[in-house]
Amino acid sequence: MNNVTTSKIKLLFRPTYRPDRKGFVKIRCFTEIKGNKMEFSTPITIKVTDWKNGKPTAKYVKDQLAHFTTAFQEIICKLEKQGLPLTHQNISNQIFLLDKKTKEKTITKGLHLPTRISLLTALEKIMQVRKNELAPTTINRDLSYFKYFKQYFKDRLHLSPTSISKVDVLDYLDYIKQKGVKNRTRNHYLTWIKAVFNQMVERGFIDENPAKDIKKLKVEESQIFAFEPEHIKPLFQLCKEKDEELYIFCLFVFYTFIRPIELRRLKVSQVNLSQNKIIIYGNQSKNKKTEFVMIPLALAKVLQETKFLERPPNDYLFSDYHELQYSRNKFSVMFSEIVRQNGFPKNYSLYCFKHTGVVEAYKAGLGIKFIKEQCRHSSLEITDKYLRSLGLYDNAEIIGKFADYTI
Image (cartoon, rainbow, N blue to C red; front, side):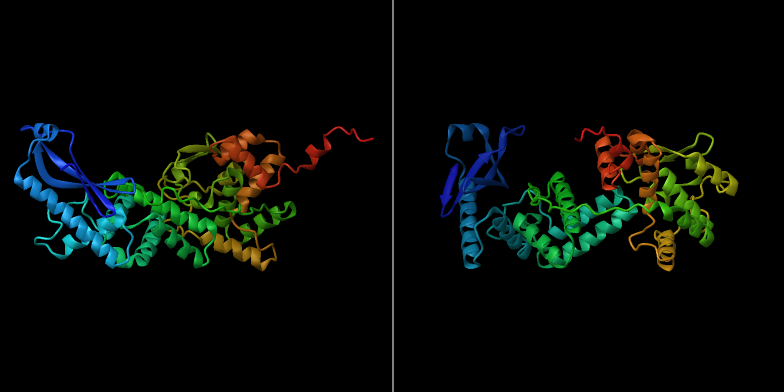
């Protein structure tokens, strides 16, 4: 009664560990294929003592175990006819389809997957959970990933989440790659898939994440640029002439190393001129941490002269109508026009003010520790890598300090 071997598959019946108050335990069914097991629950109960002593069981129990064996034999025949490999996931899919088609008695009546939920329902539940946890910009990206994933697997949304295998995920990522996206974007899709299926595992929708062993592709570090020294003042001057808010926005990025997207989220109350500090909250920051940055005196002077902070504390630093932020690309578009109209290099962007500020701080001798804290990096190693990407260790002054031992 404990083990039943059919062609190509082995069924194992085992009791649960904890008996109920009357001393009964449920019988669990395991399928074993090439040494790998998967569990299915059953409604059959038996006394622990009867199981351990090997006593003849009730006819009902014997009949039910025979019923399960027959059910699996029929499923194997169906898979063979369809040319599908004998895998646990394909068996699960057949059980799900049979029970969904006939709500009355079926060959799988009484045999249940651990969680009866479709892939679409599971995805929608997880998306709702993520929607409550993520920032608005991340939610929009999530919805985009969800849309493409749903479109690709549209013929399998009614199946169990366990129907998605590692091979399926790889096929989907290959499909994404064929659309011309770069390795970095493909890796973003993979990160999303791993996160979503991890949450399915946590909620018991699936036992294992199909994407857990899939590796990211190698990504070339994108080149970053600082302005040429002779371009810094002219660029600030042109920004000031075009729009004073644009000018002050660029000063903030240049002196505080705050990312443009983070700067849009700050409010007047977060800037403390008396202590020369700005607090950036975790829900505004890329690294999700609440941290301070210093306000250099040059920026403080401009803020005082322009009375830029003399507004209600709950106003956004940069906004159209008090509590409404400017659009995400407002200043980027304005700066791009300045670059294009005045013949500056095409790779100049608003973000370059941050890189240029770091270069100028380094050249002024402010040191790697200050740059780390002002950039809000998690380690000196990250700051070191960042400085090297800006070519700051190719410093003529440092190179010149080496003693000359040439002959």
